[in-house]
Image (cartoon, chains in turn brown, cyan):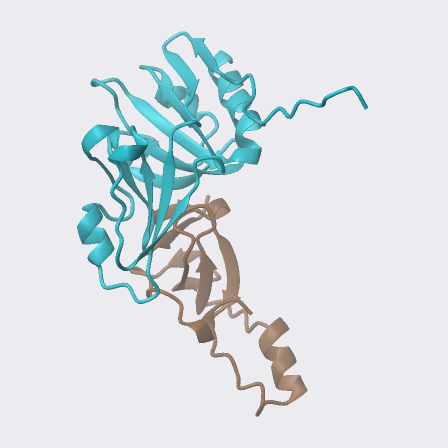
Length: 91
Length: 176
């Protein structure tokens, strides 16, 4: 079982949350190319190391937050980085 | 058409169930008010209600204030007239008929709940007065630990449409 450190609820079973995806700034739709927009929407870097992720605490506090996870070892960096800003929220 | 169809709500007939060391009672008729903090929160609502996210506090006239999410509270009213929801900086919605609520009580209540619940219900993690969102029988619920006269007791709240299923699932978990 993977425990996800929600900043509001504390460690929760990953089944109670939803991984939104890698956290990156939303590009300006008026200044980006279709290729860049597609990349933002659908592609992930997915490194075998530390990456910033946005999670949604579905059954707990109902909030989005950003944290760092090592995708190779499934470890989280504590504490979480706090609430997700709008640019890093759901795509 | 002479035949009159009678609407039976999802909780119709639920009533009460008992087992060895536990009891489950439908308390959905309890008046419930949902209080949202305003869009620009300044902490005034929390100060007025006296409780934050993840905790509950009893008020007068059987009122129970539950911090169900950051900036959201559920007021369970023993008597409707006893409520005094915040008037400034808050939005209040009456959820009485939209939310099903059950009380699971007794010395075995924790065992019954643990068999269908996704969270750790130990004394250290979920003491009296604690509030959290959790999956109960795969239904998104709000759980409130609300001991009565020293006896372990939980309030389980869900969408009304899931109420009858949830009641049956918890009853069956107790009978197992």
